[in-house]
Image 1 (tube, rainbow, N blue to C red):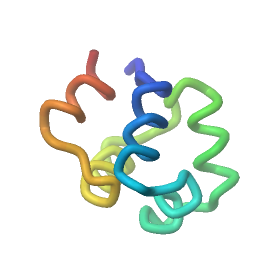
Image 2 (cartoon, rainbow, N blue to C red):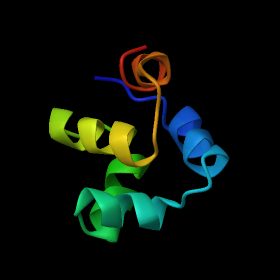
Image 3 (cartoon, rainbow, N blue to C red):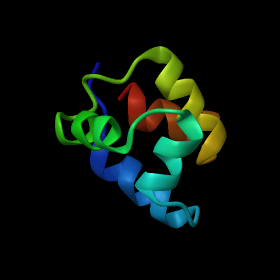
Image 4 (tube, one colour):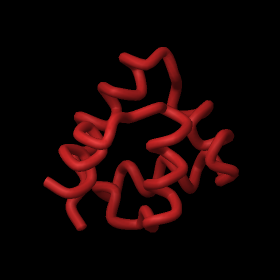
Length: 69
């Protein structure tokens, strides 16, 4: 899976969140979240993606564009 990390970062900021708050809401360690982002999102699970869609929040269209493009 290829994640559009730049678009994801942009949406996090656009929705008035931070990477730290998203990691906390997902229940994962902040450094783990940063590492997954740095690695192009390759470490994100389907569960992680579902959590991000809910906590950022993202529309279905945004989620498809970011996570499945």
